[in-house]
Length: 122
Length: 195
Image 1 (tube, rainbow over the protein chains, first blue to last red):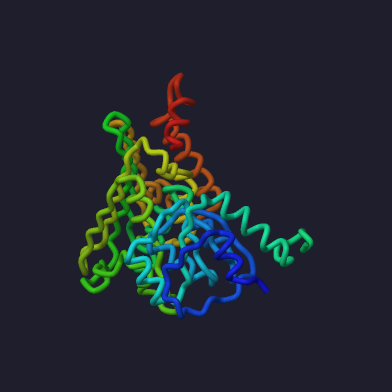
Image 2 (tube, rainbow over the protein chains, first blue to last red):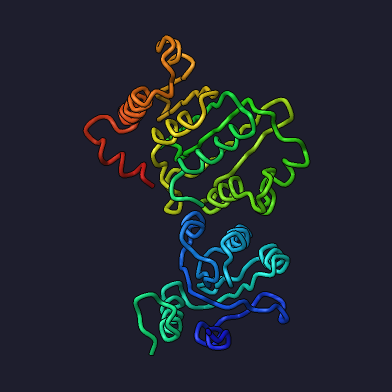
């Protein structure tokens, strides 16, 4: 089981969703900025790392069953995206890290928990 | 956004067909001098009533039953906005729908045009009730293909015959290539068209 606190600290996340929003379990991760690619390849329970912050992100995340969105590069999701995410009960964060750094730090956490296929925990 | 503009064209045109259109007019316009790439997808479908038109860019709106999200136009709008282009949709009940997407030609974030012959043939293969006019304009030079004329020349052989579709795909590929990439600097031009 992945500890959200650990992810929040390691990825330097700022939440943009209501404090009382329950955070779903994280089972993996996907990193991508092209919506059609994320629709095709991300999986239910993934944390999604992206530079995109358009409200379409919320629609794609909801369709896939993403457990949370991490908007990178210090970009802050605009109000309409945040409002839509709240309505859909989708956790949404921002981080000053870029895609590579955020994915790298998350990879380490997921690998430790045995959630990266082919990589043993430890 | 999607990988190629052709994927957006396919998506929009499929919506037209699913909505009941029997004729599609697709135009791709490349103007390298003024730096504009525009595509137009027009149909003779039922058109959108006001309440649909108002929400057509809302990703959580769809007219299809059993679906929660409708991403066709929202993703196209996102692609257009990302490059500083613009999207216009005109539609009214009984008057069909026309989607015009305008992109700056030279923009790193613009998806490449992609595989138009495959898109056109894919649309035709998927529905035998549809006629399609494809027009490609490159710096004022025009190539046009209309399946109404092709059907006449086929004298009863269905357009969906695999050999016909294969020919159509090759014909489109060669014609568009001649139009846009002909001459000695063809490779260079092709590379630039890729985005």
